[in-house]
Amino acid sequence: MTDRQAALAALAQQTIELPSWAFGNSGTRFKVFGQPGVARDPFEKLEDAAQVHRYTGVAPRVSLHIPWDLVDDFGKLASHAADLGIRIGAINSNLFQDDDYRLGSLTHPDQRVRDKAIAHHAQCVEIMRQTGSTDLKLWLPDGTNYAGQDDLRARQDRLADSLQQIYALLDPGHRLLIEYKFFEPYFYAMDIPDWGTSLLHCLALGDQAQVVLDTGHHAPGTNIEFIVMQLLRVGRLGAFDFNSRNYADDDLMVGAADPFQIFRIMNEIVAADALIGSGVNFMLDQCHNIEPKIPGQIRSVMNVQEATAKAFLVDAEALATAQRAGDVLGANRVLMDAYDTDVRPLLRELREELGLRPDPMAGYAASGYAERIRSERIGGTQAGWGA
Ligand code: LRH
Ligand code: MN
View 1 (cartoon, protein in one colour):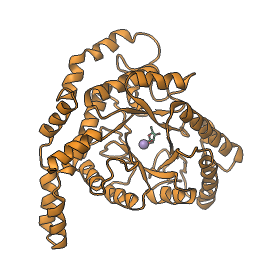
View 2 (cartoon, rainbow, N blue to C red; view 1 turned 90 degrees about the vertical axis):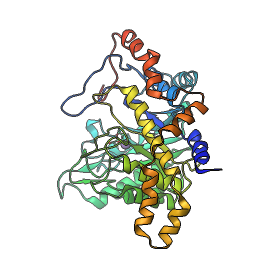
View 3 (spheres, helix red, strand yellow; view 1 turned 45 degrees about the vertical axis):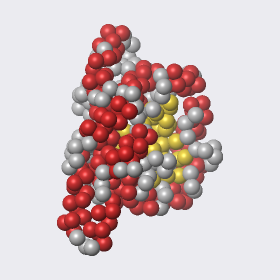
């Protein structure tokens, strides 16, 4: 099998999970922009997500965020997803929109507040049972703003105890995915600021606990693919939240701000044979503040596919030979040759093999779906941050 055939075979099995919140309105503290035709409830968010899968063929799951996606009947929501040819993926908890969590949630000095935050995860696990989801995704927004505000070690001990109680809620097939972030919404110390802290808590919990790497959650200049390599090496890379950024946690389309970075990340994934069957959940975590949301998700999925295809075209043998020989420029050249390869023809071929239009953006544009939702979705409240 040639590299090209190997790439096509793997790309045909690749799956990328979409965030339900990408289909609602979003913005910054300055403004959340509305857009005509935006989804008004989780059912409409699933319908929009199904459009992305329909034209790319590789986005069969949607992750939910609780309580943003609360419904009366999650079984009904799961069968709605099935009718649309997709399914519900990770369930995201939310510890960042409740007044009680001002000084922390799972780390809060008051046991009653910690119990409330733990109970929220019990609710999320119950939803997982109703939707058939296996991933509970926990981003810990807890932190402090001023030195001395709280005892950093005591917060870690309280956190470890809270996580232990959440871990005990899981069913055998479930995973607890712990996401880190180096700053925001707190600006002195986040309680899970980096991969090392997330990993330490995962190791303390057990095999069902894994690390989530959000590409927007690192200090500028961080070599993210090194972290990917290390977490794969110890078998604790549970998932990605893909997006891109120029400055902070910008949540822009993956690959938009730095296409070379997502290539370097996927190169580590492919080199470790971790694209398919490794348990790594490749998710998007983005907000389309000003651009149309469904095309934004389609473009993002295509950006991940392009980075992955280029990673498969790395001549691994030539690279290893150059590395062994200490041929610095030669080794770098091998990688850059793959990166500089135009893989769009290969991906058009893949889509034709999958029975899809070669250009997903053109396919969606020609479908009339955007015009239909604009004319049909009149009234009601558009979904969105803080909706
Ligand atoms: C936090 C985060 C987390 C989600 C939220 C929507 O910045 O990355 O993954 O809960 O965005
Ligand atoms: Mn994230």
